[in-house]
Length: 376
Length: 152
Image (cartoon, rainbow over all chains, first blue to last red; front, side, top):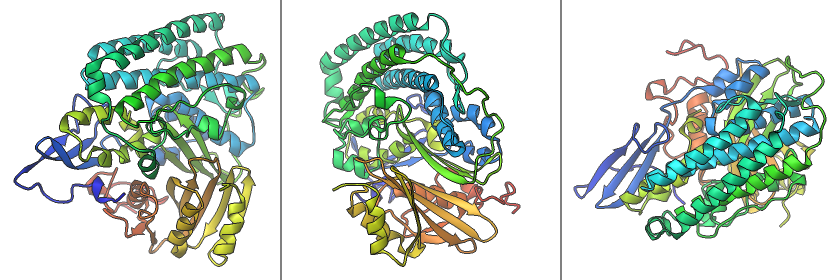
């Protein structure tokens, strides 16, 4: 794999044109600029330019105390706000040498999996509009609303949850949550299954997505991709299984893989992961112990010992990691965010080369990028 | 091929003069300091031993005289993460690029370069990635950065 395929290397020849997709385009999840050099219908070169919503988060975090950073981690990517909270919280806990209470671990798994379901639902919804399947977007957003309501019942907010705390979580489950959640999850599971069947049997949709934008397992791992795009190539790389955190060790779940690595498989992985997440949440609701949901005294003013930590989590989009360096003060000395969407976005230009212009939207959307997190 | 912490012994044997401060804090973590001039050889060695996934490259600034590049290398089939740190002089921070070994090093190196001013020799297209073009050469993530336009 060379690096020329990430750049527009020369001006277009008379038979080629240079097309700028973005930075504002109705199909995009956020602002980025995709430059394409096209000959006829075929993409010859592609270049991705990012940074339109750079927020300087890593710099900002160096000037905030540890607990002040917690709500800001939501804003790295609002669709994965629980995953961001949780990985940050585990990083600080490791520096402090504390453990969350057993009940808090289950609560974090439940919110993480709910978060994964709603992120996948919106990701698939946005993707289906891009392939011209607007009906499915409406269905997916409808299903997502009930999942977001389940999250809201626990965390108190619909998007930026700010739920994890050092050594615990912010709230316990509301009364009668289990029966409410099981009812909603059962309904959503059934509906998503029927949507899955509808998509898998539609001949136009299949023609549009099968064999399009193919990544092989070898290329995908060379490009450093993780998450659903990698699992769609058959690689069983899921941090919940490889490096189990919280209580994933005690839970029964499958790592979802597909073999073809095309647009269809990437979306199929997400559809099946929704069912798997529902199964995980049902187990958690059954197994979770009673007891405190946070430490007796939540450490709000924290001065971790000098040291550093690199913590990873299976975000809805792949491998999310945070690298914290502590100098013993109440603020992190260095805060590095390694986002999954950054890695996926980097792999997009080589994937587009040689494909048709009409497939660009389908391929890009099936990678499920999040511009907010790419730029941070 | 087992991917576990015995790799640190092999690594030390192979590059005894370029590796120091080897530490294995837990079953899934190992760290060491490396000589920046040997980074490509060391990474190629790890890649051949099954460490096929470069997780992240980060810069850390330690004024007044030091900078660090931190590599987190791992594998798609094992949880072991190796943290390798190369210390650079702050006056002329430069280190060889890993782009030929790990394809995805490209954007991480570009980001570290634009934020810290650490030059990655032979990195293709070392130009601003996230920052706007007018902030080229500002190195805003340095600890003593005082604001735009560069007042440092």
